Image (cartoon, rainbow, N blue to C red; front, top):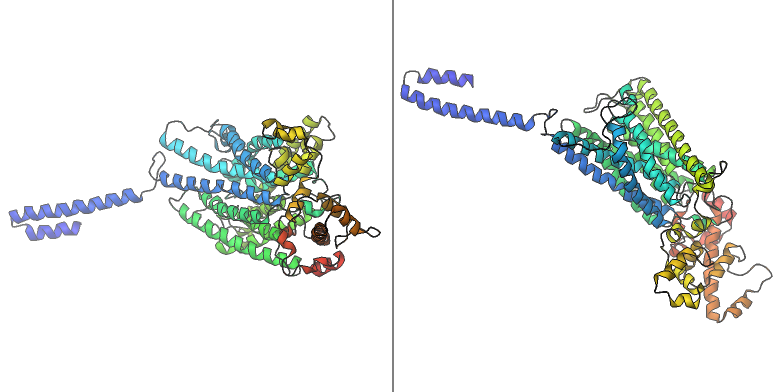
Amino acid sequence: MDQEFSDFHAVHSDDAASYCQAWEACAERFQYQRNLIEDEDILYQKPYEGESRGYADDATWILTSSFVIFTMQSGFGLLEAGSCSPGFEVNIMMKNIVDVVFSALTYYLVGYGISFGRPSTPFMGKGNFPADGGYDEVTSGLLYSKYIFQLSFAATSTTIVSGCVAMRLKFFIYVLYSLISVIFYSFVAHWVFDSTGWLYAMGAHDFAGGAPVHVFGGINGLVAVLFLGPRKGRFDGTRPLSDFFPSSPTSQCFGLLALWWGWIGFNCGSSFGITDDRWVVAIRCAVITINSTVAGGVTSMAYTLLRTNGKYIIPDHMINGILGSLVAITPACGAINTWAAFPIGSVGALVGLGCNTLICRLHLDDPVGAIGVHAGSGIWGLLSVGLFADSQLPGIEVDDGLFLGGGFKLLGLQILATVVTIGWALMWSTFFFYTVGVCISRDLKNPRAGLRVHPEEEERGADWFLHGVTDSTAFHNDTVNCSDEERSSSTSDDFFENMTTQPPKQESAITSVKSVLVGNFDDLASVKEIENGNCDGDGNKEVGVDSSNRSSDRGSTHEAKSRHSFKSKSSRRESFVRANTGVLGHSAISHYSPRDPRALTRPGLQTMQRSSASRKLEIYR
């Protein structure tokens, strides 16, 4: 620009008129270029404290990520409901609903203030009780965006326990747990997320919640399982394994997909914005998350084929393996290279599956497998930061891991964060479940009696016992067994109330479901005979009993053939179940669920008629 003015004076110095005209044209062009420069500076300037410019984009990103993370509640509900026995699906979904309700209540009142309140100490925050931002535009906007995002984390940590305690813990005790657990979660969140937290200040790194969400929630679930004990008949052989089949493997798979989608928002949203170089961190987290699940999925498929001698791809193995890889990559996704996601995801899948197998063999009853996935894979994820972290990556401040020449400093800090989180979870959850159990049971030596549901609720299902939801066959049996006077009043609310509060004696809900699925709605006694071992593989009575007499007593030849076919299919399925008990762990052969009668007629399943010993040798040789 200065050179242009020098040339202008050299050309127009002698002519005053042309000088003025040329000066005006040059000034206009100068002002135009000056405005372009100012507009560019305004457009690309960095946001400063106290200015709202730039924060809107970050808030939009955070809010969108929070919406995606909240969809994980649907995924957890579908996965847990599909993993549990029939008759508990509605109860599981209700628990996921109260997770959000009561977690949000506690986190608004005290949880956010403990995690991120100002002023604060290295141990906890001491302000923002409740989480209200006031009237300042920037201050309130920053507080609310952080609140809604961190609330989604707190609700996720709480819901992990709902799968561990499924079908045993009293509903209102779980509500109380959801209300209180968030308080203790908030302390761990302050230590690792807040800039004043003592673990954060020391240099420990947890990008997206491996410690406060997964390890904390998984250890809480382990303590709950120890206090509750296994489901009735789960390990003592008093009930057939088919009673513990997942209600819907399809629901399990759909739940995994919902969680998978939500996890991308979980990890990418933890960049907490997209301005400056944070957008680079967010998109890198997306690639790393996908790479981890690729490694976890391939490893899980190899694992399940190896365990079944190349014959089956067990849904539980694939689901929990992929979830284990997602949990493992959570604390590390912002601080590692994309190639490091493959070993982290692969090992995370193996750790989750191995821990679940060990837990089952120790007779600890975790219907969903949440302990191995969240606690086991979460611990590995925290430690992997100390191995693979790269300080040269843009947008992140972290020390180099052991494998990148950083020594043992970061690894030692990650071990410290892991141990502290485990100790904190053990301390508070042990106190909670013991205190609540003792207060209800009034027996210092038997807190389990106060924590567990009524035996009838466990047998018939919480959907019927607590929520008033019945399947059509159970409702039919209730109306058949009631008196004529009660049946005549079936249109009134009193009849439904009498049915749900004082149920008549009848077969269990599990037995009723079996009868429906095999195509026989009336002959529940034949199901009972099969479960008691009074029928052989062909549907006949034991030696010394003439099955034709039973057919003649029942009625027509057609009814006898129908009953014979029904018992034959059921006994073959029960034989197949016994042949595979205790090797793959809980709900291992879930695709033979009693909800799927077609499983008995699929091609290649004729070997179900073989003996238990030969079948087991063939699969697990």
